[in-house]
Image (spheres, rainbow, N blue to C red):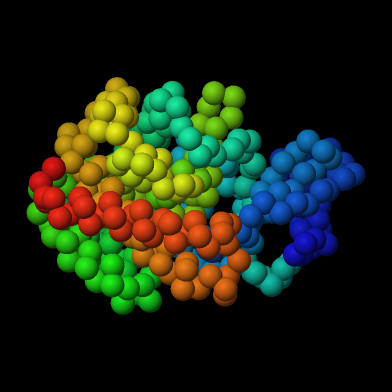
Length: 319
């Protein structure tokens, strides 16, 4: 276990900051998992207080920014951010501490699960709405801007034949539907609300791994969870057209939004393409980094995502 002694010492020294008033007699440290930028560790104090200790492996500035934004999200939708330490004095890496959220992700969703997700996202976005200027639209809610950022992030995937074939089609799709993004409002968004980051517990839904949360277009969060037709496990659930319509209509019950449907479709195409970049990058670097899932799942995700995008983008750019 990495930094076992150091983590226990940090927890003991910061117990008041962590909201623990009683004497600490027992600290249990367990692995939770490793993401692209961090390693998460479950800390159980006196067998009843649970915290997540996150060791930051890279993208420190980006995650610190996300942690600051987390303070503005509703308390019942995700973990509470407690502290961030970038000094590297206690351990040789920056770290953050959060409350622990009970729950598990699901490979298969019921209609009830989908409706709960729609409502939770709507309440998050409604409660964090703010106005943006016309000049800031391009950086805050523009899919092409986000796509260009991801192309730089996964630049080693650009030479893949499928990417070369799809990229101009994705850009054309975004540009021909740019008219739907002339809005003057933005929201705090999770930024990566795919299936593995949505957890269910006792008829409630919560969200984990907020390291990509930012200010953006609410439609991006709605689009992140699905792929039309059959799902791509474990990242995306499959939605029929009728289920997609029900999903968006449920969202609109709690948060009114003009042109939501076409923006969701544009973001869905955009984020599926950037997910393809990630899957290819992951395969190319599979032996260099430990990952959550076996190699064949990433390979299948590449095939399924490519097939869908090629079929959709060859059909029409209209929504």
